[in-house]
Image (cartoon, rainbow over all chains, first blue to last red):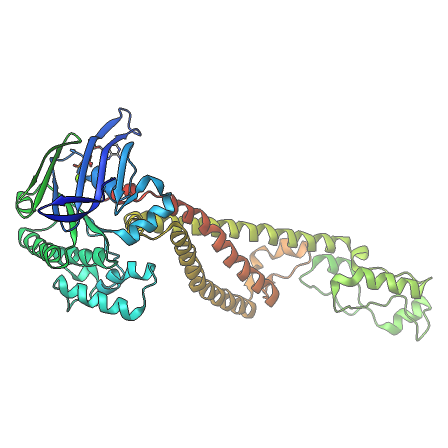
Length: 239
Length: 224
Ligand SMILES: Nc1ncnc2c1ncn2[C@@H]1O[C@H](COP(=O)(O)OP(=O)(O)O)[C@@H](O)[C@H]1O
Ligand SMILES: [Mg+2]
């Protein structure tokens, strides 16, 4: 595989390399071909939207890139590791250290405070308390919630919860962040706010984001737009 | 004749006559310092057989008999009660097992999304398994003392007041039983049952915990 590509007179690291991936769901009566030969390379520092109508295969693609599901055919390299070489438990560990997840419905743990939610993955990684506290504070400030550390998810708005989720995804310093329709449950003000924060983290921290959406306002903010339809890449535009 | 007596035990009412010892001596020619039967109470009643055997060796030609030989119905009654206790304990333990499985299965299924998220962000199966088992143990540790206290207080109260079975007193008299039952608690049974409950709780948590680690994050996360 290629680990680096020449791009704008600069060598950029390839974080995600999807090679001719197919995914067919067999459990259903009629097998569903959700992905039919998708090849994508995502470089470090990109801000990429995966776009397509409902049922086009966005979630399937993101799940496979994130190591949550396995392809029927094809290979995925994340940070240089081919995911099919990892068994289930290794894959869980790999996700813990390499991939940040932001889910459509936030999925914060309701009984934990915002701070504890952000800290959680670092606890799984046995990061010391001092480092955890510092990193949590830094991240919560980065998402504009420096003063809401001790609030439970129920005491936060949807937009605020999703910002906590972004902070949680960034906590273990992943290679990239995957977000499946992160703004689908947000109003337009919260959507704009969340994208401002993601774009700033992308610009200032060089954090790689891959998110799916079918919201035009979100698409407009992306620096690269990959359109898929019927499980195939229709277009791939950088701007 | 001095009078007719009535106890709660109709069997003994029909069988026994009480008389002055001197009258009996006169009637039976038993010498003044003699006896025709000596009753012994032993501290450990489960050792009656060994003690009786030892006495028999010492005391022959006298006949040594245990309560089981003199009154086999009593022995039957005893073992009947013991079997009943075991059956009841098993029933309660089964109810407990299903109660716990049900509670924890709910706790797992209710939080499918949460568990899916935890596994997605890197909590491994071993940790998820331990989490569910620990949760069950905590619930058992909170519940057990409360249950122990309630059970203890109930027993003490009933022991003081007694359970009134006088409605069935006629029937109970036939068996030679009192119409008030006073439950008693012995420490050994109490502790055995508490330990059994906690062990049962841990065993019962295994199925829900297995269910939790068999969840696939993608499928669990899809649930609304
Ligand atoms: N677990 C599954 N079993 C069967 N079919 C599925 C499953 N998940 C998704 N699909 C199907 O695969 C296709 C792509 O779905 P998905 O990746 O969720 O699309 P999108 O996220 O773009 O809406 C759809 O036709 C969907 O019905
Ligand atoms: Mg989707």
